[in-house]
Structures are given as C-alpha cells and as structure tokens.
Length: 443
Image 1 (cartoon, rainbow, N blue to C red):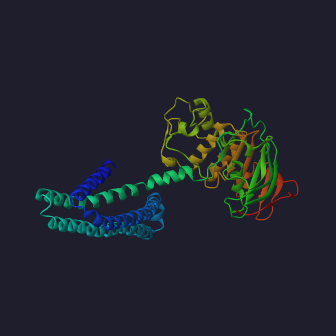
Image 2 (cartoon, helix red, strand yellow):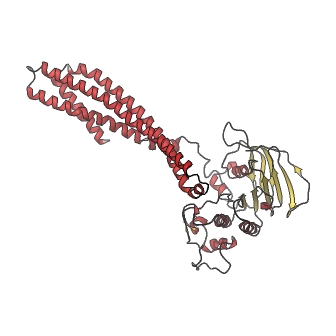
Image 3 (cartoon, one colour):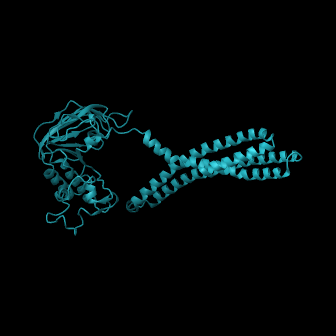
C-alpha cells in the first residue's frame, strides 16, 4: 500500500512539473484523466466480482477433491473412479474459466491505459515542439523522459490497487460472518440455580418449531410430560421428526411457539452455556477431536483421571483388570486420537461418546440413535451401559427400532400427523395407546 501511495505521488508531481512549463497541457489532461478514471473504475469493479466468482468456484474444487480423498475406498469399491475424476476436472475447468476472465480483464485494461499513455506522450511531444523557442531544451528533455516513464507506472498503480481490493475478499467474508450473520442466544442470561436440574423433569408445552423462517413447522403443538428419572423411547420412521426434539431441547433451533420447562425453569429464559452444560448427548455420528482420549473426554479439565478411567471401564472400553498406570493396552487416557478419530473403529468411537456422557454426570441424557451404525455386540454393550450407568437419570432415547429402546419405561411412537405414548414393561406393552392432545408434522 505504501508503494501505491509513492507511485501516485510521483505521477502527481510529474504532471505538476509539465503543467508549470506547458500551461495548455492542463486542457488535454482533463479529458484524458476522466478516460483513465473510467477505465480504472470499470476494471476494479469487474475484477472484484470476477475474483469473488473465482473464490466460490475454487471452494467447489476443494470440496469435491476432499470428498474424493476421504471416500477413496468407497469410490474404488463401487468402481466410480472415472465419475469422480470427471467431476473434479469439470470443477477445475469452471474455476479456470473465471481465472481466464481475470487475465482477459487485465488485457482490456492494458489496451485502454496504453491508449491514454500514448495520448499523454503525444500531447507532451506536440507542446514541446511548439514551445521549443520559449522553453529550455533541457526542460523539454526532462519532461519527455518523465512522461515516458510514468506511463508504465500508471498501469502498475492501477493493477496494484485492484489487486489489494481483490485480496480483501477474505476480509470481507470475515466481516460478513462476524457482523451480519444471525447469532445464537447469549451464553449466559440471568441467574440459574447451581444445582439445576435437580430431578430432570421435562415438560413440552405446545411446542412449535421450524428450521427457518418461511418453512413449515416440524413440531406443531407438541405437549409431553417426562417425569424425573424416566426413560423415554422416541421411535418413528425416518423423517418423522425425532431429532427435532433434540434440536429443540438443546436450543439448536429456537422455538416458534410454546415452551420447554426443565425442573421449573423455562430454557428459553437462560443462557445457552447454562443449558447445554447441564445436558448430555450420545450422538448418532460420534465426533472426536485430534488430541488424546483425555482431552476428548474432558476438554475443559474439570474431572480427575480416576473419574475418566472409571467412565472408560463403565463403557467397556478397558477391562476390569486394567489399571490407570497400565499403558500397555491400546486404549488409555494418553492414547492418541487422530482427526475425527479415524484410528478407532466406529464402535469404539461410539463407546467413547458414551463414556464422555458418563463423565459429564448430567441429570438429563439424550441418546440420538446411538446404535444405528454399530454391530449387535457393541449395541448390547451400549444398552447395558445405559441401563447401569444412567440409573435414576432422565433419558430420551431416539431410535428407529423398538429393540434399540428396550430399556425404556415409556415409548413415544411418532407419525406424520399424531403423537402418542405407550407405557411398556421390558418389551411387553401393558397398557393401551393413549393419545395426547397434540399434533406432529414430519420434518
């Protein structure tokens, strides 16, 4: 930026020098200056938009290339190498088409700035010839040498200013993300009892929720009461809206109407940190971060190593005979976890997510189809750990199948138009269906 300022200063001083000896040069400089400003403004605006277009197309290339790299084994298994290769090549061609426009735009500018520069030199030469008897020849030579040198400097200055503006696209995006995107609710809002929630009672009172303004409601007038310490199995087909309960409970999406009350506290009246730190979830797709098992189980260093080790043992990740000082096994607190936990099997990642929920010690646990992608043996381990480890806790288990929620006290089957609960003992239903005064729409 300092170089651009210096170039502009030099160009201005040269024009002042020429006008001080050749007054009529100011008359010609006016229209030439306007032509220069029009060409420069047109180039800068078009170059900026082309750069934005290129950045969008480049992100498509990176996304498709990342998909191909991450799914190499699947692509080879299904013999789709040519299809993905063609897709990546087409994305690269689209990106290069925008890149080609950048060079074409630069050539357009060069032609017009060269024309302006030629007219500047021509005008200076005419004035030097016509004023050869009134202006010292040494001054005329100095003026001609200067005007010849600044023609290239003008092009360089315009290109550098445009390049700086183009490279500010990243800053513009950061500013947009930081100031114009809709933000979540505050992390802390009002006072919450330190012991909340003491019992884990959840009341859904005519809850309505949509994922975005203008979209239909995915929860329409849902009313449900979950007693303290109860285990609720929420079962339904894909798209029935089971995970929408979890989104509403964790306030991943704000409600359009109604309220959710936990132990007498309306969750919409408290901060997100105060709410989410008191809840635990076992997700369908376990998420692990690069680091160690210790950092994944307890990222904020709130628990002792003995508590972390006990959770691993309770989740059946380590044997009963293994000790905290035993580093011979594959899984211990200092075991390395690669990006997304790819050095562990899917079942082990799911058990680590279960262990993380055990460590939190929350009174309310949400199990979002935690066994949908694991084998029967791991499924049995997770079921046993849930029964033993979450005794006395309030548990919402979202699942496709009744078998996944066989430990539940209540079942809440969902359909696209109604919601009802069935009380079950083990796997046998004892009472008849009870319809609740609410309706439910599929997501």
